[in-house]
Amino acid sequence: MKEENIKALTTNKDVFITYVKKYYNRQNDFSNSSYYFHKRVIETIRTSKTHKDLFKDKIFLEFVYATLSTWGLDRMDGSARLVEFDIFRKSVLDNLSLFLKVDRL
Image: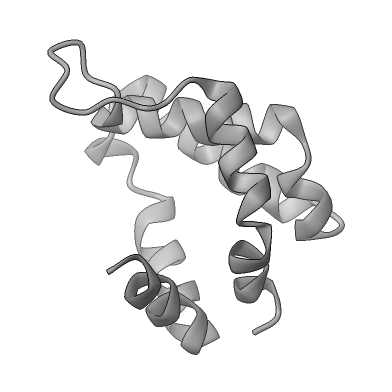
């Protein structure tokens, strides 16, 4: 499933951009904190020189981590839990080549 999702996003740049545009300006659909961190992620991507450097930026990954948390992926009831940040960051860096596939489209 993971590989299918990545393939769907990396196969066609226009499809990927459509999803980004569709969800970027949906402030009314998000809580204030969720919208704030989501927007910070997008703004950081837009101002980054290269995506390879972006993923090595700890602050950017903290924004991504916070966004995932505000989207409900780290629930107090334990129904969804993020791993600790350092494990999350290591996993992103270990899979950097998959993330960079999107950059090459």
